[in-house]
Length: 121
Length: 254
Image (cartoon, rainbow over all chains, first blue to last red; front, side, top):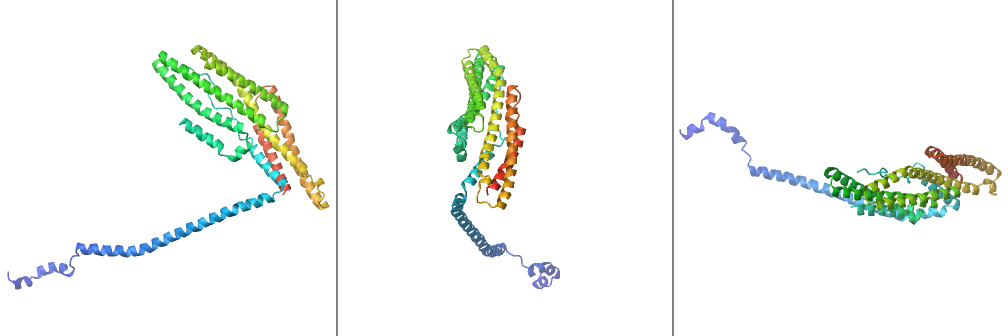
């Protein structure tokens, strides 16, 4: 078969045409395109991650400051409360504590849970 | 393992500072000792059951000897627990307020007598030379148990009622201090308002007092006739009355 015959063979041309129009993508090219996508996501993810971390650190610092300020203020408040109470009020409060301890439903002297029968051989 | 558990229990007793302030140190030691003995009893009980199983299976003289020793150990631990329990009741009674002295002394005498019985019982069981002697000693123990349980129930009722009486007595003392008639700073209008509130508190106080008297009488009658000492319902009812009395008192003194 001459070269002219080959070029004019329409059946063969029609069969080969799709391959010529869309050449197959090489595996290496696929890998590089994927890595490009990953890099794009990385550029997006890093700022988001940093933002979340920053928020967390800020929140922790603020909560620590709050706890410290509460610790500082509580004894002062307690002092104020105790100093303001009159002797009579203190006696009433002591009575309330005594009353709580006298709850008849609390049986703190229950008989010991031991086997009171004779051990059988 | 048991030593560790006992140490943890001891720690649990000692780490509550509020309780430690209120309670006598002897009471704390006794409580810790009691809890430790309960743990030791559990160990002795499991050893006894093991020895019993072996004797049933093997039926040899050696396994019988093991069983005898295990049962003596179990009974010894049991007597120890009961002895400490009655010592706890005794110490609580001594420290309690609100109990009439004659009632307290009579009950303390009974508790001390029970402690002597338990000590004798303990010696009997410990020195029993053979199976028959062990069985005799335990039979004596079992015969005495109902009387001990009865005494413990009575002591518990007295302690609970004594606590309630002590709260009432303290409330009464505070009421006497807050009588509006003795406050010269009040105007006529203020005095009439205060007096109405005070009268209401006094009516609650009277109700609580009446209920307490009735309970003490019921307890004494039950003791005399060897009946049950179930005062829980009456105690709960009066506890509610005293609660209202204290709430009123709290409001009145603000």
